[in-house]
Length: 129
Image 1 (spheres, rainbow, N blue to C red):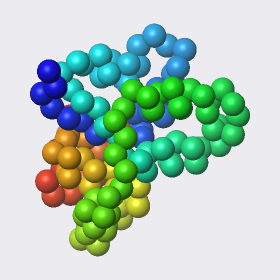
Image 2: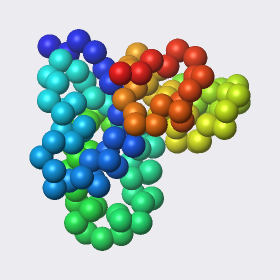
Image 3: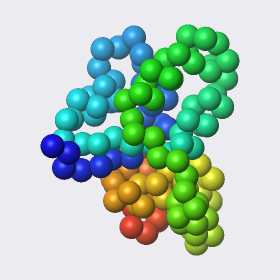
């Protein structure tokens, strides 16, 4: 039975891709939690494929394989509106994709798992793992 939802930030997936040969990565560890539904924003897919390493077949295939572990949430008008408000109201400069990832977490009543908390500081209603 799923008891909580966690939105996974791109940073955790990138960290996993860099350490793929290691048997224990943060991503492998968190995905073992059967009581948690793991979601990602569709913006994470864009960020992953924007990386230079995704130009070759092996990394592309590995990204696609990893994405199968998640419930992918498309950016809806509600998420887009909240992401825009986050960017508008933030005292820090929040990147476009980070605002969408945060809005996805908030809209879905999910915690956020990230390696870059500073990128999301000061966002109201956003809670971290």
